[in-house]
Amino acid sequence: MLSKSVLSSQRQLAAPRPVVSGLRVSPVWGGITLASIALLWILASSALWLLAFIGLIVLTHEGGHLVAARRAGMEPTEFFWGFGPEIVGFDIGKCRYGIKAIFLGGYVKLWGMTPTSELPEGVEEAGTYRAASHGGRLATILAGPGVNIASAVVVFFLAELLDGNTLLASASASVGWVWFVIASTGESLWLFVREIQPYLGAVADTSGTVEPPVRFMSPVAQASTTGAVVDAGLTTSLRWFGILSCAIGVVNLLPLPPLDGAHALVAASEKITQVVRRDRSVSLDVRRLEPLAYATIGILVLLSITALVFDVRDLIAA
Image (spheres, one colour):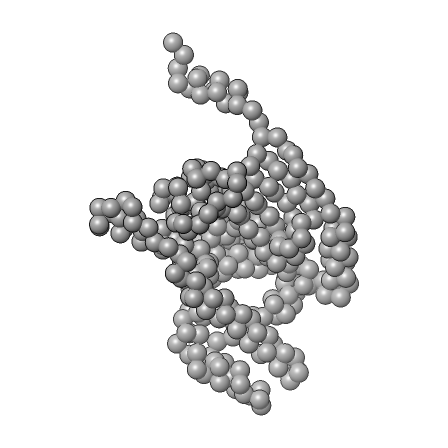
């Protein structure tokens, strides 16, 4: 009689490999994007470096979601770097991969994120987010921020090694760096919430002499810093990448929709409610959180705009 391991190996050998199909390339949008990148390199190379850093962070973040979703039995239908028009795309199995023209993020498409959302033709219920176990949903959501924080540990470790430290010292220092970023990010967010009135007062100050209780970096300042650290060398660049990656991971863990932390909280709360009520049919509809999601997005936009105001003021004053 064949053992289970032999039977499993035979099934894996017999299973057909996913076929790459549906390749499409848009020369127009590809050309526009390349021209935009070239222009950005000429006018503001530091901004291009920032896009590269953020792009890699987003790619690993969404890659964490993708791998965890597959392990949980979900069937993602899209995995793209960027938004907007598609530059290049291809299908592997039931999922389409590719690059889109606007390099300001990325995404993994999972269906069934709400209990009653309709599914398009060709998408089966068994492969949806809502059909997965609560543990699978939680792992899928937390995988993105988890990969960001884990990536930060790795790059901090490499930076310490390149500085000549021992393996043990580098490992200890990398954990210390991550904890510093987590604590600093949390402290800054809490200070912003606690001192929101003085912060807005500093924004409204026309004299430019009132300093806010906490300063966030605008994209302009982030780009400038990124250009400076790239010029400073590899170890400095690795540490800056680690800071960005860890901070993005921490912010995504906040329990505010549409951030990952809110989806994780919903999955955990739904499971706890089912256990307490002894009713597996209980489901929590995340659509009820849409007003809070809009408020969160508004606050993030406000932070970006006000940070830009402070940076512009500093430039004028200088």
